[in-house]
Image 1 (cartoon, rainbow, N blue to C red):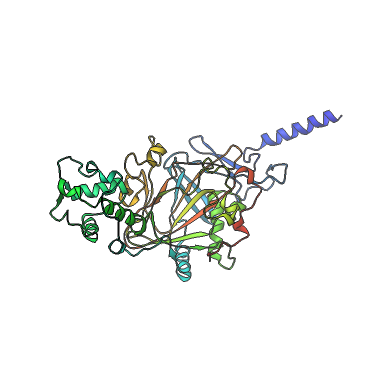
Image 2 (tube, rainbow, N blue to C red):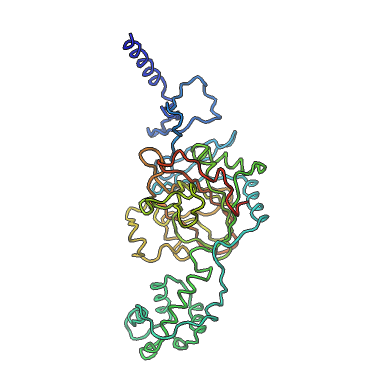
Length: 442
């Protein structure tokens, strides 16, 4: 009798599963596009489908809903998503590696202006140290011959004609220090060090024997590391909380992000505060990753699960990044993905600058394979990590290298919305951002 009852129940269950092709076992809705590709996503709370449709959940109530990543399908692929009642946006694939999507008019004029005004009200701080730009004229530098490759004439005389011209000096600086100066700026460095060898347009062999290459190398390095224009990042920032229930615009934005990403609410609510940035002329952020590879930090806990270890003793576990453009920029300010969809990309070669310092987006913005122009209300969404075989945070996508190009005219306002998520072993833990307001967030 028990055996017969089990067979009946099993048959009923199978028939029920087969009878519905709208929802999967995970309670997801699946549809096929005109190309025959199947795409699954969670049932929309605004969906007016019959509530009697069977939906299946995991038997263990302690198991949480896993993560979700949109399938890019191909460049140019579009899908419509209702982000709030009556408002639909288009999610358009801009790259497949990494998975990059653009969304026009994701923010309304009111939302974009509100974020900017709120940032202005609380005040922005420098993202990097602003050192006096006259530091090179005030500092005493080492004098004499450099002990590294800068002490070798072959590093300077690129055409081997016995004369080192100003363009060759500039090239030497770029190659060795990764510092990009124009002719006027380079002559200013020579003047600050009271060096006259280039006054006649070139340095001859006799002059090179006594050339203060050690001082030049130190001055160039100092400029590279301290002058905000030449640092890896030059901007101002402030952090705004999503958790202020009195701010209806910010809380509504969070609801829209839940719809856009198709991620569980607890994941979105556990994201970092919104980072709002202002880039003024020459403002930039050279190519970088928003996450950190678990292979390089195998025993390091995620920062959003261990706030006390920030910023150096934890690992950034940002599944994805959403960039919001908050104004129209007069010139520059593009978001560049240097290696998006590049078939010949080798991360080690790129890191070693085998083909030049392509990290430097002040110089090589348009060498990038994907460049997105800032436009008020536009959003760019991309994934920094893959998912593991259990549906939780996996390895880092090394194609997700990205950054901000120089502002050539005007000012750029933008915001970063970083969505944190746990690896499988910490899937049961809540992000501490849901319980603790980070210091310095408003």
